[in-house]
Image 1 (cartoon, rainbow, N blue to C red):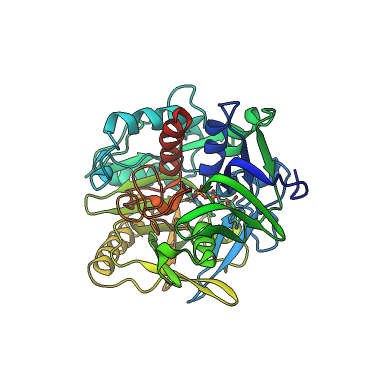
Image 2 (cartoon, rainbow, N blue to C red):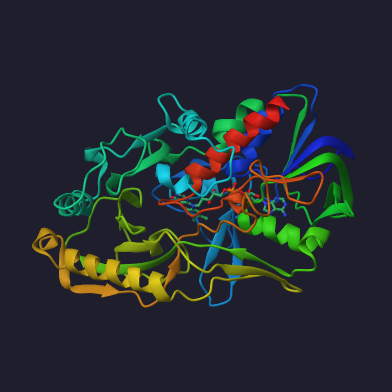
Length: 441
Ligand SMILES: Cc1cc2nc3c(=O)[nH]c(=O)nc-3n(C[C@H](O)[C@H](O)[C@H](O)COP(=O)(O)OP(=O)(O)OC[C@H]3O[C@@H](n4cnc5c(N)ncnc54)[C@H](O)[C@@H]3O)c2cc1C
């Protein structure tokens, strides 16, 4: 699987073998009469157990499975690449959004269809092998965290797939402590189909278009012609391709909006060393849109380059207001996540205050040094960028780019709302549902 020997023409080109792209490649190649080419800029190999181990996020700038983007204020932004994309390297918490997070979605997204697509992934025998962390797998802080919040908030039963406002034990896509990637779940079994061609080390530079019609992709010196291009290069990758392609429909814009779940970390020092566990095993969802994340370790153990500051509880703002932007420059894409202010800043402050109170309470007294509890001054990112080409405005409910022919987007870019938890399960749900429609077309 290398970039050599690209076909000159196929029916469909899918750009990006990540969380969404793997699902689409499997769905669309079910029809033996449709030729499908899946391209990824990452390496051809299957991410090894070392890469997929939930005990170690292999996020280093020099990893072949990760790509660092530049952020204007110096926040580290990374994405997975290669077979599985970000599903090969992410935190492995695989929670559905709340049912009312879909209220602003365009007509066509029926609650029963959403539930059906989620169930394919996380239901009994589901493709992503999702299960909640068991009581015997937890870091010591997790039962204390859950006990503290359960005094005032409901607790979701561990096998219930829909999250609640309250305490949610994390459900994770995993085999033991190995992430179950989108490539393992969808691509591996489809690879022997003669109508599916997969090429790695194949970076798409731009779309080939004339007026409002897209007719192929440019990969280095090569052009591959096709009836439709599906962009699944992730929110940042897809925006980069769109901005480099100078499409009529973007009317000369050199930037696209990007939303993020901004997060403040509250650190502490442990009294005694804890067992090594996956990083995130329990979260609280508040009714005003915060996700409080009980991390079990120091992020610095997982993401190279971060200063070691101790384990943390994160407070993430899940209903952000004004978006940041991804801008194309001669040096490449630059992301500017902007500043958090107004209502969102006030909500984050309130959440941080509650977490400070929690960590200094008697519940945690024997686990941590209470005078070590400190708020990180940097408002960080959850690595969740979404929403640059939302369904209902820039794309239709199946991801077709409004005003263009032959161009569809299916990845984090088309999420029209931000959701109450991480985007992974929902991006894959969207790919399953749209993939079903396209497979029947
Ligand atoms: C470190 C990290 C931790 C995270 N943790 C969680 C979590 O615990 N829970 C959660 O819900 N979400 C999490 N997320 C977010 C979640 O993983 C992503 O939102 C999701 O995987 C994105 O899926 P996607 O299909 O949009 O893109 P991706 O899975 O990122 O796939 C995009 C693919 O496109 C390829 N590509 C990009 N540009 C090009 C190009 N020009 N040509 C060819 N190929 C290209 C890339 O190599 C990549 O393989 C995390 C993300 C990261 C990075």
